[in-house]
Image: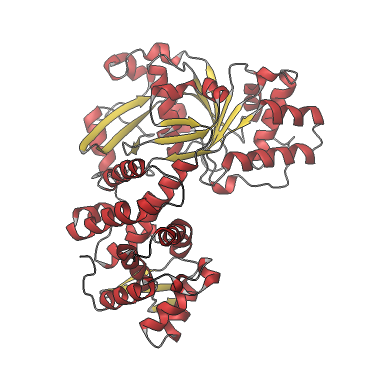
Length: 496
């Protein structure tokens, strides 16, 4: 027998699935969201739905599908309801639960429903804009703000805000709180700059520009939750059998969630859904959250990915199930990276965050491929780890031994054995793997020209154009990397 489709009609028949759904479906629209992706549904929309259930925020979301590909049929079929399976480890305990989210009221296509989208600007209760249009989305392009719709996301947003300015005669109360979640540093600041530039380029007037600057809050934000793409068929079948219904919009996420937003009292007041979950943090400065995530989660991923991959493992979870690699991961994170974060961090706070990250790495439901973490390996190493290494040496002359092992594994991973159609490949015990890094050709040349591994390490570490500093001058680090590279090259374990 085919399982029924998730819909309000199904909820009518099985009210135990979603208590108080009639009340929740009748709430007014308060947010316009640019993007239909799983991250938005798994994080901001999750928080809004949770707040609604607690009678805190009491508002729903109009979602704008900005891209031209695909339609909104699945959302229409299910009246914008979707299931959210939350699976993972929290405080050492396994979590496996599924909720139904009804936070979305409408899903509109920017290409087909632009007039309807602009009409939302006339709604006095709609005070919030949320976006995730990928990092490429927050860029200035020459645009036509009178088009239906403008091409770029900032163009769409500028047209929307201009419509709101006119609808409410530029009143202070009509200003909006705008929270982009695109994964770039200073996303709110950059979006604000582009919107102001669009306003100036299109001669929208000084009154509009003053209103943008004085009464609209463009908030920098940081999102942190693993929400993979469409679940595999096995997971879909498993969850469908468990729930007793079919859901074409099903998403799966880890338990951990963080949405850090820069803002003051006004932002807190408007984003009242933050009261429903400790995962939403609104503070005047979110640099601490960015540093913790960048140095401990991302930095550990980068130092461990090549090492664990060359050790014969394929996923983060496998790496945490292997005693040797698990010890390396926890050691390099908690003993070397956490004390050396290049930001003023309470040591207890860093340790607490690090332990949360280790729980996330152990998640039995998330298959995070190590080879995917090595994409743009060199740029990640430079951005995520080199500032921490330099800060370590500001505090101590002691060699960070685990860091040196991870760096040696990075160098060996970047050793190519084949070049085909512009793609470099490395070798893992007779198995070729892609080196997907813009610096692949650089390392191919270094490996080819070096007469010894010692010479290779010296050449790479001393390259200030690559790292922004002479890493060969760091006390003992050069020798430690050479020693570990030689051991790893002989297929001897370097994880002690």
